[in-house]
Amino acid sequence: MTSEDLNKWIACDQCNSAQALYLVKLMDGELAFCGHHFNKNKEALDKVSYEIVELDRKEAVPQLEKEEV
Ligand SMILES: [Zn+2]
Image (cartoon, rainbow, N blue to C red; front, side, top):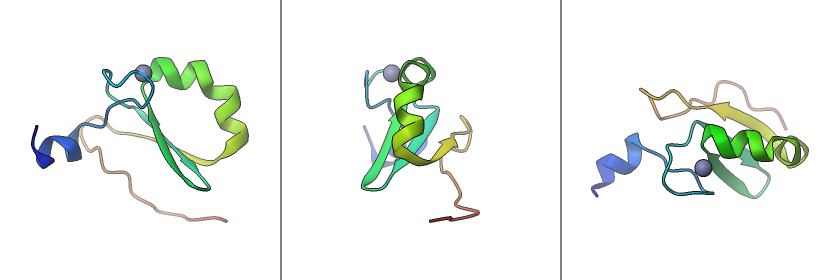
C-alpha cells in the first residue's frame, strides 16, 4: 500500500475492510465508519461527536467549511 492509497481510501475503524463513508469528529480525535457501522453506532456517536462529515467516495478529503466550537 502506498501513501497515495491512504489518501484516497479511508478504511472503517470498526471493520477495517469497508471503505469509510463517514468521518465522526470527536473532541479528542476522529473516527471513520463505513455505512454499516455508522448506522449501528449512530445513536452513541450523535452524543459524543461535534461534527459528522459525509465522505465523498471520489474526493475522500473532507473540507472544513465551518468550524463551530
Ligand atoms: Zn465497518
